[in-house]
Image 1 (cartoon, helix red, strand yellow):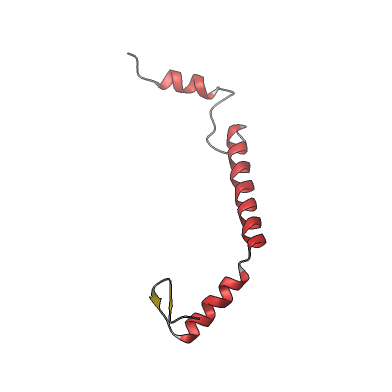
Image 2 (spheres, rainbow, N blue to C red):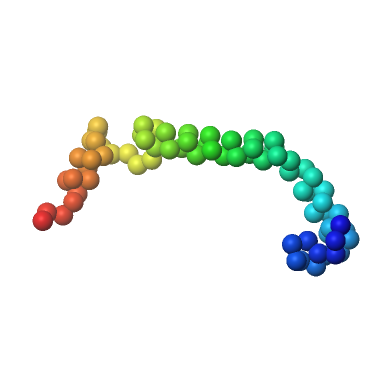
Amino acid sequence: MPETYNNVPMTEEEAKLVAERDARWTGPRLIALCAVSLGIALLILWSAAWRKIGPTFEGEVPLIHYLDTTAPNR
């Protein structure tokens, strides 16, 4: 391995550690990590859209109605 890694000087021990960590993060593992992250993000968005999570209102007040009644009169 070269003396530097991305223009950062490092010792042989550090270079070996970086090489080991880089070897663990293969393409399929990164793709799986991206898929899991995207799945969690979509689950959170779906839950918020269907009001499974997020702010609650008294009764069954639709969000648009709630915003319209709190808007200043013009």
